[in-house]
Length: 323
Image (cartoon, rainbow, N blue to C red; front, side, top):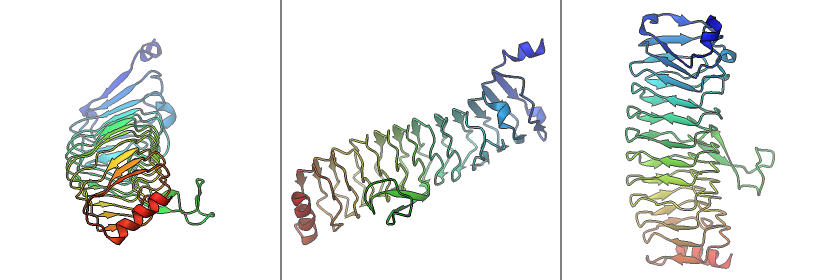
């Protein structure tokens, strides 16, 4: 009889009265249709690890009052949400409480079933790889966030190194994953209005990415930030942008681009192999541009530049037109 009733339970609220106690690893074993665990205990709630017993829990809601929650195979957190341990990969949504200040490195990484994370406006920083290799489809990074950590990408120069095809020196792999790196379902991103940098490798290999809302205040776009984003056809760069680093938009789907006059530096192969790129308006105030910034942009036929002509710009334009 009790077993039959448990089949109808889809939500369990963990009360404040269990503060200081744990939840046994088999506590929910006979609740086969459980969809949500809501924790209202204030601190130090621990659910012991036994992922096999929680395969049907796609949504976990952490209480607003919670300051330290440890779910063994869920994030270790409180003010900081830390690294997930390996195990259960069935949670589809996470709603973080407004006590969370930092989302640590690789906090939600490798959760391919994860579709949605709500980030409260208490969060100020997000670590490298925090949402890498997840199934997140869209996300809003609130304006409270002021710090996004760089991934550490490098060009593969040796065939014995990690190799994803193509020519030597062409493909990236991250030593420390970018924040959303290889999240292949990610399509829409709204960035915080209070960041000054798009970090390195942030969207590397986000193959479905097609819309990024970026606001005035961003001054630099990091190395390989939008590397291999074939569905990113258009992006509006803010008029505060100064530096576009190497490989920033390499192998992206850009078709046209206006580089604002605030930009003074464009790095090595920044737009390498953007085969769909047909027209570009260069900043009039560029003082440093790599000679191969637009290498292998085979369909680039329209280049607009109204600044003072100097040898480096002439060299780049000549190289493009003769490619």
